Image 1 (cartoon, rainbow, N blue to C red):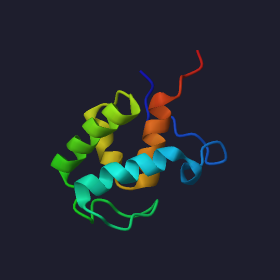
Image 2: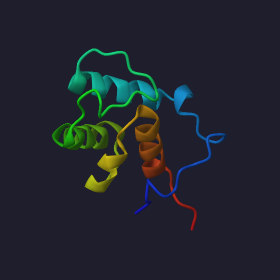
Image 3: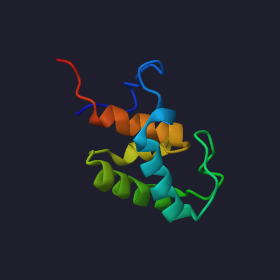
Image 4: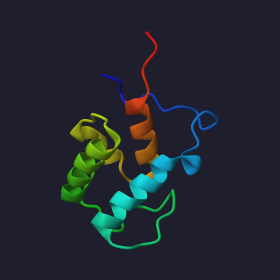
Length: 96
């Protein structure tokens, strides 16, 4: 399985701000955290994204974006930018 944490694409290749992925992540987070202003670098832990909410977020991300992630990636769910990279990497095939 592709390791979404170790295979971060260079930002020149992947621009999370320009991605429709970001809107989906924000929609999920607003469902979990309430209607808040979220930027790419908002610290989600400071907004109350605790360990239980991160597991719920993991399940919602897997369902919405059809990716398979492991629970250990939830520690990477600190910002929308980081979440979008994790999802992007999980859905990008690895060259053999």
